[in-house]
Length: 134
Image (cartoon, rainbow, N blue to C red):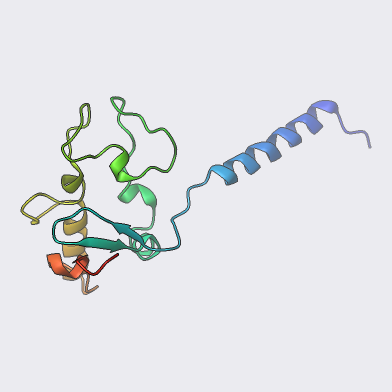
């Protein structure tokens, strides 16, 4: 049976797209990250544990804004969120995680919800912020 050139080209293109898509797929770092710079101490952040709860990266990592497009698929929060906030970004680093009073925000709201559902997520500042984190 003869195979047409178009079919072979389409198969080759399909394989290339799959391989490129796999190479671009985002993966969480395996080792915990140390988020430094907080006055109460650094936070040891385990992506793997959080991904198990959240289910997908976009729960925490929002899409870039047109005013400040991402330079790569995986960027550190500090690439856009700085102290103080640098225009066009208006949210400083701490506020990217929680408000200055540490009563609400991305991390705290999720932890409070998990805790209320019996998942024992840390909800006190010192549960995450530790001076002993390197």
